[in-house]
Length: 481
Image (cartoon, rainbow, N blue to C red; front, side, top):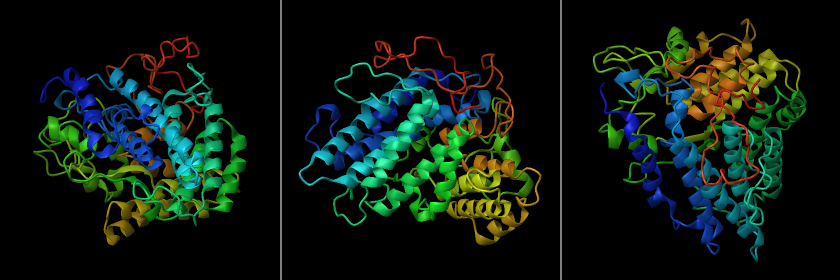
């Protein structure tokens, strides 16, 4: 085996991320008692902690492996047989981040912004939008979660709301945020807003796009949501260019690098010995010589071409790794929401006729715009991009246009494994998802992992309103058909 036993060092790796992000948080380590701290600082703290979790050992690593859009390379790399072995540090730290750390600080910031002598509605809206995005992540990981009673000081043990009620609450929170936004007001979070620097036009587009994403996640289980999808398509106002991408910036400055990079820096000397080219994605890129291939992957040490590997198969020196110079570099941003993601959602809506008449020509235009935008994001030259666009199937003539959209969504989400896991589950009823995955060898019998177990933590164990029945990781969430 090329590495030390990774399982023996998991706890250290997970703890590194939370210990190392402090230099960027710009606030004390006990925000629950910092009632006099400004909304700007609370916002910055909560945002940074959230992104550190998304890109670090607690979320990025387990989702990259369990979603099967990256490969472990078995005993050559990360270690065999642990794709579904989700560390209690991952589940516990992620839950705690959503509620005690980031969620609590967003709530404190909202209260301070709305109770200030000069009410700062924009600051409250900025916090509500990020809180909505976080809770969307939380419910797509666990399903039923505290929402309506969460963060209420008078309620010690909040109830776990059913997932459709959580989705409804998220949509309501986004509507309230959109209504609060005043693009002409100077009162807002500016310098401490690492996403948009207080550009409230972009914040409004982000909130509207997030509403669209939530509705697209709900619509298969609740077809009535198609009406709202159609209304948003008609009204517009969603992310409509790459400059409105929701990206959390990292830098090459020590202590402020992307947490993915820190794993490789600390445990592999900067080389990528952990994450490899999974055939579940490469087999959809290779036939058309996708120009993103060299951006996504590095050749193996002894290889002259990109060689992929199945999820849990052992790799070797010919196996390609995820590119450390692009996706895993120190200043690689955290992609929270992108223009190409929005375009693919809209293409899917027109291809399926969700709230609008089926319009494959419109869907094809949006689908190809999404591909083009993805190429632009990864700095693919215009000739290679044009050649690829000429080679992809037209949605007006292909037998299964929705499948082609899902294919591009899957490829685009290589570096966003939590979103890839969601996309796979929402891409079709059980057994017809895209891509068609194989349950990895060595994982427990019973089917694919479709959710995380609730953490056995001090926040949940004493809660008399927490679920009492055992919910296994193969149990589908409400939206997952």
